[in-house]
Image (cartoon, rainbow, N blue to C red):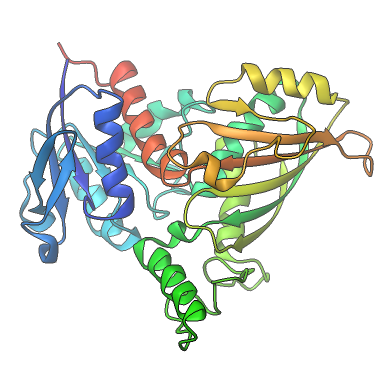
Length: 339
C-alpha cells in the first residue's frame, strides 16, 4: 500500500520537518510533491537523498492525491483546505483555522485516535496548537488513571513557534547586543534577546491571549471539556523546543510514585526525573527528539490532590511535523487502506 502525498508550505520550517519525518519514519508514499506559493516556485527542498522542485499550489491538481499535509498558515488553509477535501484528498492542517470546527477532528494520536473517524465530514483533520499537543501527551495517561479537575500551565515557548522570522530576530538581536549595535524589533512587541515576553498571539477581551485561549479550548476538545485550564503563555529566547510547568489537581489521590510509573509506560513519553543537579530535561536536550519529556514530578502541597511536573518537547516535531505525520500514519492504517 502506498499513497501520493502533497506537502503544502514545503519551504517553511514545519514543511521541511514534515518532509524529514515522512522520510525518517518510512511513510509509505509512492510520490511526495512539494507545494508552496508562486514566489517559491522552482526552489528545491530535500526529501531523504532526493531533491524536490517546489510546485505552485495555485496550479496543482489534487485529484489522485491521497493526503495533503498543510503547513502554510491559516489564510492559506481557509482558502484551500475545503476545496482540496472535496477532491477526495484528506487535508491534515497545521494551522488554527479548523481546530474548533465541530466537523473537523482535532487529533493527538496518543490521546484521541478514535476521534479521527470524523474526518469524513470535510476530509480535513486538524493538528493542535504546539503547546497543547505536548501537554495532551503528558495529561492523557494521568487523566485515564485519576480524573484531572484543573490544570494551571505556564509555557516557555521558543522563537521557532513564530517561524523562521522569529528565529532570525533572536539571532539578529543577540548579535546586535554583543557588537553594541541598535536592537531592532519586527516580529515581537518587545526585545526577545535576553528577555521574556508574556504575550503570544493577540490579546482578547478577557485579557487572555489567543495562545492561552487555544490551550483551554483545545484541551476540552481533545481530552475532556470538564477539565478547567488556566494558561499563561510566554515567549523565551530559546531557538527550539517548548517547555511547560504544569500544575495538576485531581479528583482523588495520585502519588508521585504512581504518576511516574504511569508516565514511564505511556506512549510518546520519556521520563527523565532524577532529583539531582541536571537530572531533568531542558529545551536543548529535546531538539530533534520525538518524545515528550517529563521531569520534576512532585507533590503540590497547597491542594489536597495535586502534582507538579515539567514538560519539554521539540515544537517543530511533536508540536507540528511529527504529530501531522503520525496522524497520516493513523489515517492510512485505519481508514485509507488501499488494495
